[in-house]
Image 1 (cartoon, rainbow, N blue to C red):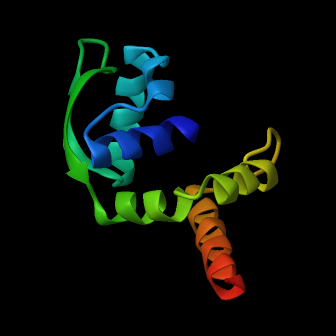
Image 2: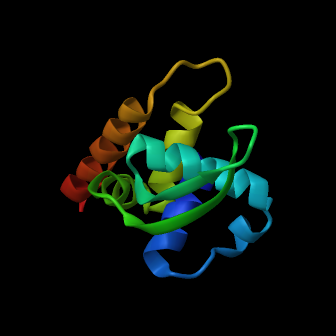
Length: 112
């Protein structure tokens, strides 16, 4: 999920976060593929002969992509979500993660 978040930051800002530069091109393309499929990004993925993604042309974030990025923008909230939800062996869905992040953002807004 860190890679998903970094890719969304990249598409929004237009420049690659340094942490994402350390991720292989193959891994980034795989994530582009699943993120387009999940509706986080608008774009086109090119598949090779084996059916695996080999390239991508990403146009922009979708509404859902903006929603997730905005909810995960605060590093403290993101770290808390990773600690509470994104643990090995713990069952979660993307929807649960987004709702948790939104809840934490709302909670923080009411505390300020």
